[in-house]
Image (cartoon, rainbow, N blue to C red; front, side, top):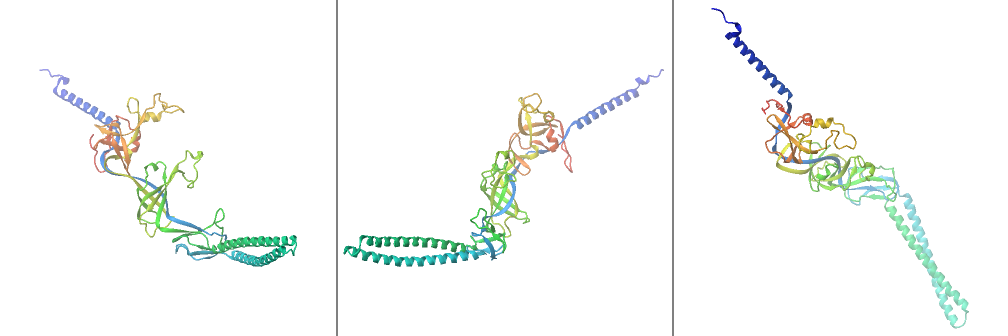
Length: 442
């Protein structure tokens, strides 16, 4: 009996089947590996309800609400200081004295001139009395035709002259009395007194130094007296955050020098005009500063400040601008901006970035009309992402409220930031395994 050919044998058929199975398996494995490699690796998180607190943080300086820069009303050299920095003082308490030598001399000169004028006044009064007696006698003698009209006229003129001289001396005395009062006031002001109850928070001058008086354009500040019972922190808030601030908002203040101390406060003043960043408060804003960053001065009044709090300490204020409970929220980094075409399709961000816009063009060099930019998130479903526009609300420390466009439990792409920058709509993704666990299959 003749043997059958090998290619018709059972062994050959089994061998051929195995080769086909291996080839198909290899092809499937290759396609699976290729698909896995082409998928974009992302981090995901479910949209959930959370309590959000929106805050604005800014740095500033501790200041007393009420304080006075004390200057001398008269110029001169400081001869004595009765206090030192940190001392408590009362209203009317002497703080220091200014050299009074020339003011004492001026006062004595004014007193002597006044006394001399008063003596002249008394003598002039006596002369006037004599002139009036002569006038009365002359009147009788004129009636009796014992003197001439000329003699009578001279007697009358003498009375008028003496009266005018006496009036001039009276006015002179008034002037000298006013000058003496002024000299005495200047002498009295050589003793500088406290304008209020408080603490000497800053002492800028010492005994022997010369100061300029308050009558000048820029008087010398000798010291600062402050009322420590009400303290504030003045902060500069960025212009982009000022719209979220309102009077009465609660604030938490941390002072650099007081570790682990948190002081409660509230917003009591909000500046009406912007300050160019780095410029002095109150400086006018000109056209040259139109494109520069600006801040607004905001005052926070502290509640129950600790006794260890001192003026001029650096502080950071965290103002609570909004607070909501159990609102739908997603991580801040999950919200991205994408351009939507007029047809409502999401424009590839890579294509937009690759285009080189020319000045004056609105199509960004792509040859198409520029679409509308929308905020949104990427929702993951069956291994694919879809861009969904959302409407956002308040922003917390790490999450942002979603008002519309998303449902609780939706799986969204939350990272990485680098991936989110270029992630395309309808892209196929694989979820990155969390640390210490496995990623869920999508």
